[in-house]
Length: 123
Image (cartoon, rainbow, N blue to C red; front, side):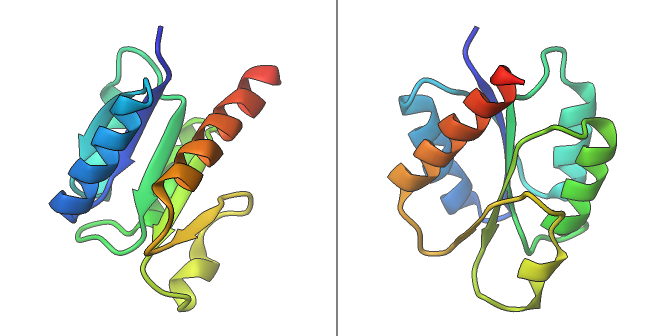
């Protein structure tokens, strides 16, 4: 079974671009347009997600709140945070959540995703 990623971003262009990059790298990807939809998708998943990639600023639920909710459901869940600036939102994420500041290298994001999933599988 392929590694499963939940990709949560309200910017449809960015979400589709990242989803395609992850799929082209062999991941199975489910997309959500905001934190509420992401939490719903995570909770309803038949097969668990191996990683969540979430944007910071989204309507209805910001990325930090989504990460907190997801960590209550799975305390070891790998999460990657995408952020548009070095502002105060970066300090809101739970500990151990790597942050990628836009613009970032998609290849570096893919490498980090693979590394985080491998580390989880080793535990």
